[in-house]
Image (cartoon, rainbow, N blue to C red; front, top):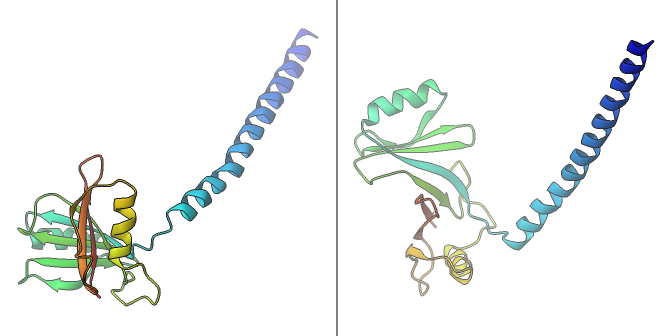
Length: 167
């Protein structure tokens, strides 16, 4: 009889713990999209296509490696010491001898196929927003011009971010 009471008590405890965890997780899941939505609405900048620009030691070796991951050459050339590799909408730039370290790259006005998008934020508008937010830029776009321009900044962990507008 004691085993029956312990078994029932175990089931009740399991039920209570499961009920508690379910209600806690349910509250978190309903608040999460609201947090994303709030952040999205406050900082809705259209940064354009995203890629990572990798500084590579040997372009041929890196090309072969990323091809094994399903990437194909999209732009650039071996003779120019850089390739843009593409896998669906993922882009990786491989650059030999052009810069030190890796760079997070955004291209306002382009999609992941380097095609123009109708609606985008000009880099000068993005620059103004970044500066108004208190960020320090390591290079800036000339605000008196229009068209192609770029800017650079560094995140708190030392990662370089390039915004490079081609049109």
